Length: 450
Image (cartoon, rainbow, N blue to C red; front, top):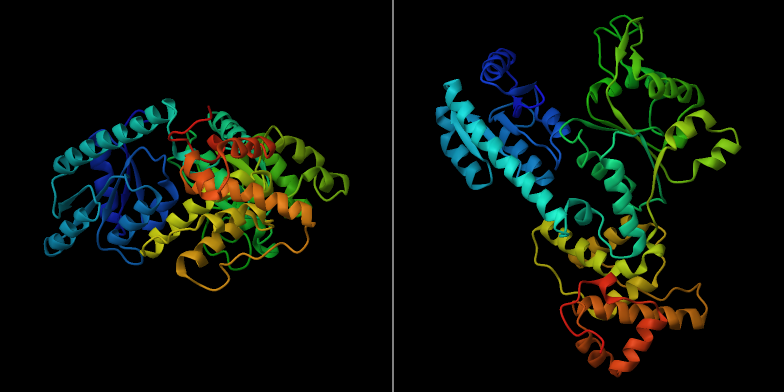
């Protein structure tokens, strides 16, 4: 049914869910029946190519909440709400808030099918438009998630797109807070598995007593307290992606079992002898190069080489200082929107100081500063770096001051040298000295050298 329009049908009533699924499948849709909004959120990422149909009244996460959560992921995912007669005003309000349409109970399946077809066609046009914009060289989802004009970021996005087009298992390496999980999610969302689950597993936080049950699942009676069969996380990710965070912390005995899963693509639930085929892509994350762990005997060499086929290195902020001012401005915009407060103007001198600092927490630390800056909290001021030599601090400050001014003035150089009180020739000489290219900081509007 791969060529059919995909529908996530969310309803807590099993009988209603089953009958509607059968009717929609007969109408020519690829339907995935789900009992809760959380299951829908696991399947619908920014690359999701289908339609969500949800009952408006459900325990836990209701249809209105699901609508809001889905539109946090992608505001253009079409959501159709199923509502009772008394809830029509609520559904109308939901449409004003971004729902695609609503249908009232009891409904005729043909009417629902007509609405779904229109929504699916709309979604197809949205995704095609995004692809065309990307081909035309404009900002696409990957560049929006991983911004930056430095060469290390250009190379990272290029490799991510190349690997994303394949189905290869991938190892992502980078320091704490650099954005490894963002890279992993982007890799999933541009792949053919985008509409399937993305299951994240923190290998350092798995409970030892239940680690195999959590990953592989179990049958009823497999151990005391196992009263019913249960899918493990690997099996729950059917058709999608499994993210193994902190892969270097995985216990040695589990490393051997993971190697077998990677090689054979089958699992066996606890208490069962029947193998279960596994169709997933594995993405592993490590904050350190695993070669050292292999040399110390802490990580299996054969597992390392099995994961080391496709590798993405996420750079620290120290390797992309020219990106820091604009990255901070983007984080400020996101924070202001999230808190629903006006965006504060960011002084050029403040931006200049950002690039001069070391950021051991990388993007995560910069995001925290942006949050404090937007909220006007203490701790959003920057002081000098006490560990640097005077000559290094002077050079770093001058370089960051120029980079920050270029970013603050949108890449236009005339207001930069006028604001800094230097000549055009001096500005160009210093840009050359510090290897500053305004195109790496922001696309220029005018005012090129000459």
